[in-house]
Length: 386
Ligand SMILES: Cc1cc2nc3c(=O)[nH]c(=O)nc-3n(C[C@H](O)[C@H](O)[C@H](O)COP(=O)(O)O)c2cc1C
Image (tube, rainbow, N blue to C red; front, side, top):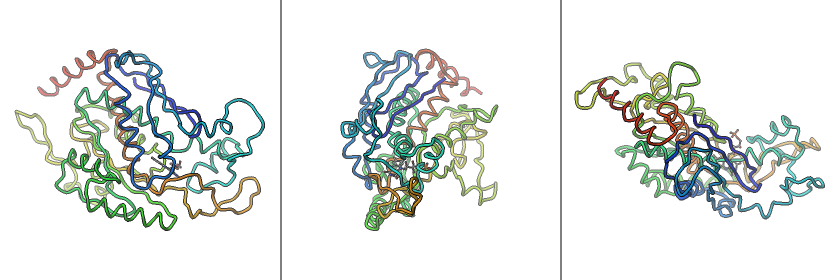
């Protein structure tokens, strides 16, 4: 079983996670993870914080000489801003904090509900953990998961398909091409014209003191048939993947395969017909199901699209109420981004990679990578002759 917990305040000392269940013998280096940490920080539309934080992972346990030990892997990502915050955020008891106190909740954030729920009079106690800074450690966890998936030829890709109503055309591109082209784009959009229009839209939003959301797609290539299960509701991989994506800050919807469009069509236009060829076994002509049937992977690529709402912190702030005085105010401005859909795609890859790795460990799990590979190979041989 794969599991992890994370902790860390946005302006605290750093972010930390303990990941358990990765088999021994997996080659793993910080570089595998730092690449994705850096990808998460890029993208047109980011604010000042990205220039302060240059994220790097440090392994505190579970790895020796570039190889996993089969013991819990502790990952740490330092907050470079800590020096400027260490008095305000000090864990030691002391006089009440008077600096950087937040009493005006921002609409669209956890600020008000979090303050009431946990009885905090300084909203900083809420926003420090609710903030999407937390996604850095999730990307680090995803990096470990990707490394395991790669041993089984499974790749996880993402790209931006829509920002502020501007849609990209992906026609004629393979997933790998779309991904490669997206990596060259400052909004992670595979199409040059779409990229330029998205940048323009973000520029427009910035000019107005406004923000934007959008849609990103995550695709898992080469998943084996049979991950997840219909046997129990919480083992359905469709639900687990949707939960993972919806757990990212600011996500408002997930589509699988043809998604919402399938609700507007006849069944005959939706379901992927089954064919058989001696050389390849069972095959499909289409992939409207997005690689999942009955909560189980069917061997086709997994296709997931996620909708992100516009960033909630506006430079022309919305109306709010001070929680101390109960007077109307304008919401507080924490340093903020205009649009983070490009970064959210990288986070999407990470959370999907984690769920895929968890499902892989459940099905083929072993204490060592070799044992897992043996289980995987014999299962694949069985599927081939079915
Ligand atoms: C990568 C990423 C970066 C984000 N950056 C910001 C930001 O700079 N400012 C902001 O107000 N919200 C940002 N958000 C969104 C908020 O964290 C989120 O809307 C807020 O915590 C409330 O959670 P909810 O939208 O899920 O209800 C970001 C989200 C992601 C995924």
